[in-house]
Length: 347
Image: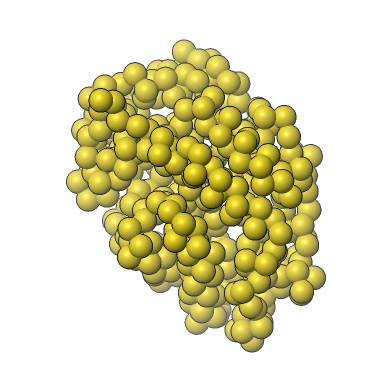
């Protein structure tokens, strides 16, 4: 009997060798929404349509993981910030953005009410859609809901430039902010995990190797990720982590996060990542989403995918993934080829 996509990716999380190379996009919300012919704004108040979009695109794309709510990550911040003047800005192309930041001090953090996270209508829409998708296709695919990671979410609350400076000038404040955000994400995910979701999915781009150094990573980004992943493990749930940029100088720190898998940016040397992580942590990577998937031919995509698998993925504990979320304008031909390479690669 063949393994389901869900079983295949879960086997990889454990460091094992499933019957073929696991493959998934990371997020994919912008591409899926464009392909389905809808918009973020239209989906934001329509549970059934959001769920249908995820299900239709899952069967079309055939990624092993389905990411509900991809592109809606900023609403977790908006949910807490509306009473302080933070709003949403929908875009013609791209994910919704926030209109302002609203945390400048520990006193501001203390004013935030975590219970607001479950009161916001868009957050409720995404969560209800996640439940519906999991009910309908969760036995076949691994269904998750995407969020910003604790460091990135804290930087969104404060403002990225101010937050970066605070890692030097107000480190105790940064520590409190990221710990608060870890607790907020636990509160957000708790009802979904209780309802049977098996995996949480975290994007922490502000913890990029292009923005913070390994010492900052160890102090400010790893501890809240560990807190979050430890909580998930206690509920028998996995944690997917993606961090943008070149993180090749801190590969061992990903083991310290306790996450089930780390998805690498195209800037990371995947051979080096394999040398450090193989047998210790599942990892994924790292076909360039723009240079290859968007701008090259299907034949070029095929070659790039095979090269990554040959270097890093022949012995299990590996997932073929783009180096980041994908642009909405990538051709379906290239998306299909990306998946087909792994779907046809038997161990």
